[in-house]
Amino acid sequence: MKPAPFRYADPLTLDEALAVLSDEGEGAKVLAGGQSLLPLLSMRLAAPATLVDINRVPGLDTVKATGDGVTVGALVRHARLLGGHPDAMAAARVQPLLARATANVAHPAIRNRGTTVGSIAHADPSGEMTSVLALTDGSVTVATPNGVETVGWRDLFVGPLETSVHGPAIVTSAFFPALAAHSGTAFAEVARRKGDYAVCGGGVVVTLDADRRVAAVRAAYVSVGLTPEVHDLTDAVIGQPADSADWAAAGAFARTLVDPDTDLHASADYRRLLVGVLTERMLAEAAAEASARVTGE
Amino acid sequence: MSTDTERTVTLTVNGVPREATVPVRRLLSDALRHDLGLTGTHVGCEHGVCGACTVLVDGAPVRSCLMLAVQVDGHEVTTVEGLAHADHQGGQVLHPVQEAFRECHALQCGFCTPGFLMTIAAGLEGRDNSAELTEEEVDDMVGGNLCRCTGYANIKKAVHHAAATMRDSE
Ligand SMILES: Cc1cc2nc3c(=O)[nH]c(=O)nc-3n(C[C@H](O)[C@H](O)[C@H](O)COP(=O)(O)OP(=O)(O)OC[C@H]3O[C@@H](n4cnc5c(N)ncnc54)[C@H](O)[C@@H]3O)c2cc1C
Ligand code: FES
Ligand code: FES
Image (cartoon, rainbow over all chains, first blue to last red; front, side):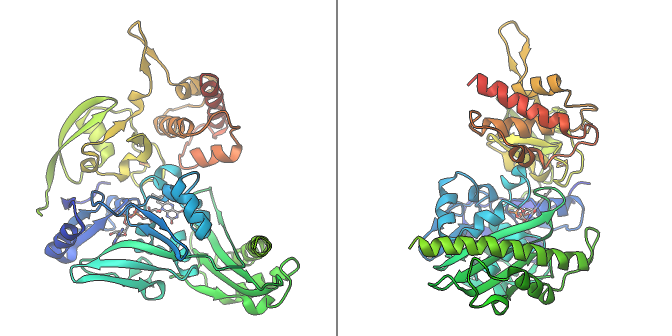
């Protein structure tokens, strides 16, 4: 099908974009990469009165990596965080989860348009980047006609496809804090084809002490639960040596913490099984990376 | 700033300047086919899943069903019609990927073919073809395109074939 008729504006500044959003009121929607919004329009699952296209607003397409973390602007396409791009390499040194998760987001042609910030604003429970924002304890910056505010991930995600960003507001960037010292990460998922939405996926962060014993383990999952959640798995393996920790026990523990749904693609039980298997695999990988980082010091 | 319901869009398609006046809700795929008469770009699912509508915008592959025509104002679009090049005798020389599809029997009904051709052409042109092309890389390149006929084996064969041709001519 085709989108229902709407009005369209493509403002050239952020202020102008916020002004149109205010003027148009309730029925206005921000258009970023369009890779989630346009399918919704064409399937007539959404019929906003006005689209405010932010693609011509300057200054939103930067990736900034500092010692504190990585700030990703609202017009940074998924593809920018991958592969040989200098931005991607700088970001990966500070927070490797970004590129690792992005590699699982959709297919190349979709990654050329879709944005990291758009997928966070969209808050799809099967999107990868919402979980990465949670797992890294990140936040977003939101511009409104009244000013700019920072919203932490816990206050951002309200429900499936629902955030606390309402009214005339534009998410201008997302901030992913840096990976802590002595830590390693991994990201993995099971999907029907590479690039499809995950049947089940997730990311982990393992932190070791100076003797390479497990100090902290956190995990967040994709397509499991309605909003991103961070699970603390530390108790299952605390104090165990990184190279021989009982990761299967941590995987089994993770299975007891999650509450997935049954849908067309998988039953809740199958998803819970995948949580265990993927967690065990990812933790071994992340621990090896953390161990190498302890050595590297 | 005001909002519009109709706009005139000026763009370059396959190197030729074009103009069309369209309702703002017109998808790029429909603008190419209906307003500009370029029916080589196929439309399957119209929600980003099948890849049949893939075209290049400023050289990068995108789903033309997931862009509005108004968004390409001032940009450059390449469709499957722009893949072959004119030779000196008034004929056309196929792009190495088109040649490889013919050679490897990588199409049957041909519905998915324009999308595959654009995706693969951009994928191979964007990489260093002296480096070995892995199966994983090929899967990543074409994994977003659906074909209901071929079973994909010959399409993947064609990707390797085209990569070899492009490497030899580099
Ligand atoms: C075939 C297909 C497969 C896909 N597979 C995956 C996948 O595996 N994993 C995955 O995570 N995603 C997947 N996607 C979705 C893709 O990642 C989208 O790019 C992303 O979800 C939304 O980003 P966008 O920039 O395209 O946003 P848009 O589609 O433009 O917008 C989505 C929603 O967010 C709002 N929004 C966007 N940006 C802002 C902003 N800056 N401020 C305020 N509101 C904003 C819009 O108003 C809209 O409601 C897939 C898409 C397709 C078509
Ligand atoms: S028609 Fe555009 S992806 Fe199927
Ligand atoms: S050749 Fe028929 S769909 Fe691919």
